[in-house]
Length: 544
Image (cartoon, rainbow, N blue to C red):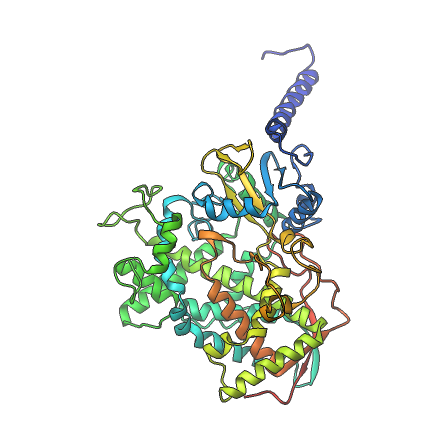
């Protein structure tokens, strides 16, 4: 054995120091990146970059980026580091518009990238896809979320809203009033909604808090320290996941999705059952290449999206098989993952938005009273029934939801990666290919330079009759060609839930309610920390 010295311990010490030195160099070698480009930046720390507070579980990613946003007042952008990776945090509205809309073809893809073989439901859905596969699937799915398709699915959501009222009555135990965990109740409502609209299946979460749908979907969003850390690595150092074969999410999620999707598809194909839900639309795309009613060609919405860089214009498929026409085959996990993201995104984002809406309405009884009056007037005008058109015609309800989305964007930041070298508008600064760009939505939407009294709940700021509406009311659904395709579904779930609840109940803060609301520091999404316990009182003059 070759020794460097006469002492084994000395040799071992030299080896350890050498290895640590290599790790230190790898962790810090990019720290001069922004200085060399002349971009102001936040001084990083070895191994964590600027994510120390997030990795220690002290603050959420959304809050951390919002802090950096406010610390950089007067600057159009600022450099930062996620672990070893250079990140450009953008503040300027014109630069944001260029990245998300005007120069979208440079910033088509997200940075989020778990290992595709280990987490296929997260990498193969529309949110996680990149390149030609994303463009191809986006064009195929665009017609599934039109207003006409939402009307077909509406009654499924409305029925779940009625069942939620029955759950609240049971939770009150026959009493007139009680302190209820509204975050859990609303999550059970949206779980059953996405199960019904997505698969035509009874999720049973409103009847059983431990129902399988509820239990599995809870695993997607219940962030503990390790899940949060692995999700951060999936954003900023994804190669580590593949190198060490690390799965971000529980394997049961993938197994559950595959089983439910393909059992339901098989049953419908054997029986000829057509239910006009989301899975039915996916099956049409799988069988025919398009959704019925839209014809074999791209509908107008998809064609418009294609003009913005959405079309699968090239022949590459990122390794996916092609059908006889040369298109990417819509089958296997690529098919199942679209059903999965409908479930995962639909239940958590909508339930969280409603949770914060309940909180603000509890703290602002004047707004709650005004909204209830509008709801009941609309119900009376429709014979006590909540129709799709009646829901959409409630203007104050829409203002309330808009203000909640501004104050509490469930996805509090947007991420993009440059696909080629990109010169920032009106500067001499060029972003290298592969550079990550972050847009801090939470910070932007609480900026006093953009919104008057930004931390106050003021739905009237969206009332055009009372003054100009902010040009960027919110970016809770994203912006540009990668805007959330399920936006209409999200609005529908939230509004139906609020209408049914407020028609039957009054909500107030309880002694357990934390004011102002606190965010879960472990979550990548913007979620209330510790739930939302509010006092709920039954009303006896509901319009039915």
